[in-house]
Amino acid sequence: MKSRQRLYNRPKNFGRELRVADFIRIELTDLLRNKVRDPRVSQNEVTISDVKVSRDLAYADVYVACQSDDGEEAAEAILSVMRNAAGFFRSELAQRHSMRTTPELRFHFDRTEAEASRIEELLARVRRS
Image (cartoon, rainbow, N blue to C red; front, top):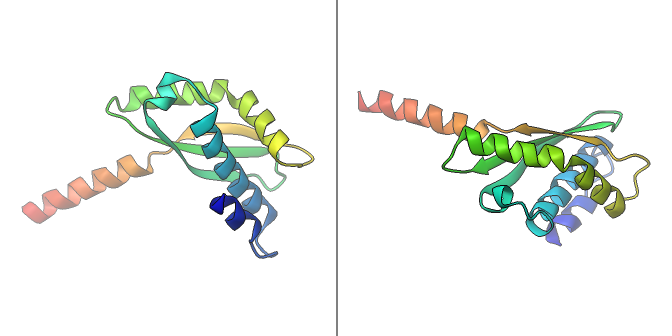
């Protein structure tokens, strides 16, 4: 609930696409926790790391990060589940907010954490040598 209050207490000059992106991120996180029952999602720690909405609010690029020991295979399976459930997510978002149109959701794997750990590992090697 606290995160929703933060969403609606934004200053007016906070762009509409940023408010919509924030709303989508919060609501998708809630849907993942409470509505998605697929074991590939529930057994892995899946988070919505970022959402970028087009200026015309037609598309939302959703970046998904997951903590899994299976690596790339698990990430692809999770993305497949998310893409297959995109219509469900979109209809749930439409019910939760009164927008004229709900953006089409496009899911992408967020490699930021993997890249950060790879860079840290490289820096650790440099320090050791």
